[in-house]
Image (cartoon, rainbow, N blue to C red; front, side, top):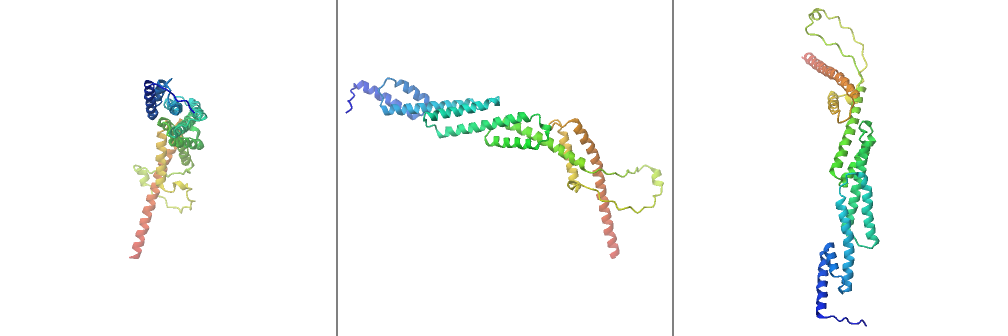
Amino acid sequence: MERPVCRSIAVSQKILVHEENLTKAIESYDFHVLDKTLQECHGIDIAVKQQKKAEVLHLKLQHELKIKTFLNEKHHHDNYKDIRKDVQRINDMVQTAQNLEIDLDSNLISEVNQFSSRLISERNLRKQRDLYLESIKSCDKEKVDKLQGLIDTANENNVEREYIDNAEKLSSQMSGNIKARETLQMLLDYPEREYPEPEDPNDKKAKDKKAPPKKKKKKEPPFPTPEWAEELDSVVQKVKEMEQLAADKVNLNLDEQFISQVSEQLQRFKKEIAFRRMQEEEARLEAELKALKKKVKKK
């Protein structure tokens, strides 16, 4: 049999007050409140079960507070090279608590996992951006795709907007540089042709001269128009696109040699577009004339 504990009314009353305070502290689920109350209960003969419950919760709240404080303090990193170390530290804190068989709050575990995913994603994005800063002119589509993949992952993990915006700007610059070079190459690959000399309307001698008899023209092979340029509107659009890309030369890191090539092609295509418009107009007039002749014959 357990020996009965004999206490005075005053002592019993004192113990009861501390036990009530400890119960309230446990219910508050606040580390600082519980820590203070446990210190006040030091040397008091609190019920064993209640004391044990308070100590277990105290240890749990202590470790959770340490983890939460770290999460708040390490939300932002000026230097991405510190990220890996801090991710390791937060995961070590969780592992230490689990080794002590502390039942950490599931929401806190989820928060730690999100923190780790976000920071690792941020580190990868910032590191890759730094590596690619000098690669705007590289014309490497694989690099653009890799950077875009990191941007997508960063968005999914809620990485700070500043770093996503910086990476998106670089991706846009790299893509724009590639687009500019591809567009120029399309213009360069467009075959050159000889254009008829324009007639001077003020040349009286040319007007007085009798036109020589028309010789039967040899049938020439069709002009090898690239597939993308079969419609004149497509050519006009491509030239406008080239002009816009060249106008953004500083942002897209386009050098003067490239811009010089662009200028040459824009001058050439100014003539080409005018010539093709003239061809289309001649074809339209010829079609109208044929249609008119058919009507006359029917009458």
